[in-house]
Length: 201
Image 1: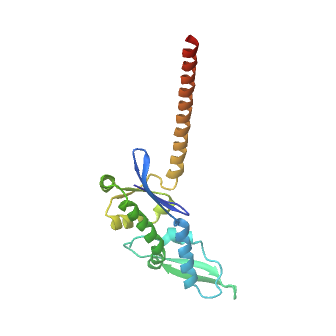
Image 2: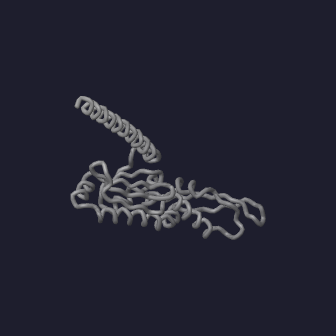
Image 3: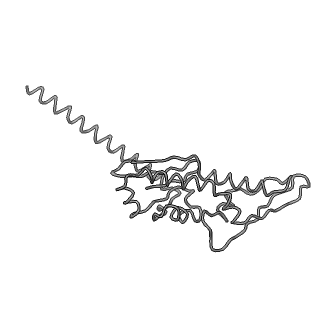
């Protein structure tokens, strides 16, 4: 099973014998997490506050999907649009995790739904070999721990989750191109053989 948490969507797929057996696609991802932090900031900010620091920075700094041993805080600096004076807002990792929870729940439910539709023999393999996480969104602190706790399955990060999907797509295209060229050569060879047989007859 592979879970790819991208920017705009998250994809879950069970692969076997070189093909997709079952899959699920969800319209949530890294951007949805950023938007949740943006809404949290708007709820916490007093009227008149200017543009805050980028939500992605907050997500990377103190965001988490699973409770951490030591809770942390971060300070968002902005400018009051009325007075023009610098202002600041402090967010805690607890607040940020609560804001991210709805999106993470959607992703976890998508994984569970895919597991429910997976044939028993393949589900047994997944319980032994685990779930592989890919995509930049899977780098959120505690995401693997959350998925492990919710599914009871081993969960691992792919090597270089941020770029492995595009690198894999490139390798797949290269392999497809090689297969197409080989098929064309076989077809041409068969055509030549047919002509030779025809001329001999």
